[in-house]
Amino acid sequence: MTPMTRCFVVILLMLQLAGCGKSGPPPLLIGVSGSSSDALFALAEQHQFFAQEHQPVQTRLYATPAEAAQALAKGEVDAINSNVLETVKLFEQASWQPKIFWAMSYSNGGQVLLARSGINNVAALAGKRVAYRQGTLDVLALYLALQQAKLPLAQIQHLPLPPAASLADAGSDALLLPATQAETLLAGQGWSKLYDSSQSPEVLLDVLLANETHIRKRGLDLDKMMRALGRAARLAAPQAGQVWLDRAQQNLYFAAGGRLAEALYHADAALRSSSQLSKPACGRLCIDNRVMELPSE
Image (tube, rainbow, N blue to C red):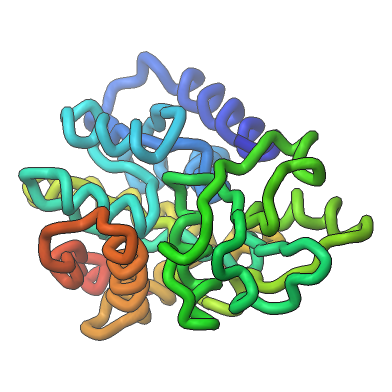
């Protein structure tokens, strides 16, 4: 979790505690795991957008998206702020139907693939050692980068990304890492950029998802939360490497054949290429398009 994200989480918790003891409808409990898009919840709370909708929202912080997904499966939370890759994993593992009902943001240069001197293109990574944050959305980012050269994930050596302080000394030929960390290495010598996520626009998506039956149960409450988040997205300051998505943009993602279906297709292909899936692709099965019925503001 970045310091900025940690700050947003602390602010959100303080604002939520300030509202404890007030009567009203039951809060929506949302699992978060340190994604930069979690900041929209803090912003919506700060500007009282949830209060304007008469729908309290509380977040619960988990160490990883996988832990948040487990909490959702156990019914500890109503929904989670996750991503398209985790959605496909959950569809594969769960006996119930996970559904995406809101697109929060997408990476637009936030992930960068660097290679050591002498490796001049993605195709040259065949057989090379690539370090990245395994089990995260970076799996999809790496898959998309390698696809530029039609290079399967199976044709590289996979290493865990080392701590920031030892990145330059890691025994890897390439690194896929957050852009903020990549800047330091690029400022020195011996590393060059082969790819960043702006070359795969609107695929590395953070999304809100829930159990299909729970969406039917608390759909009207979720609608209120979505309206509040839409206002927060319009108000949010631009953030390097990321694009916020408000209500007006949701139609582009949730319409039949829209951008969300395409992102899920790539997430499915990334996991299937490393033999992590056995079920058919979830595709439209993982999309709830109730947001299409919400009026744009």
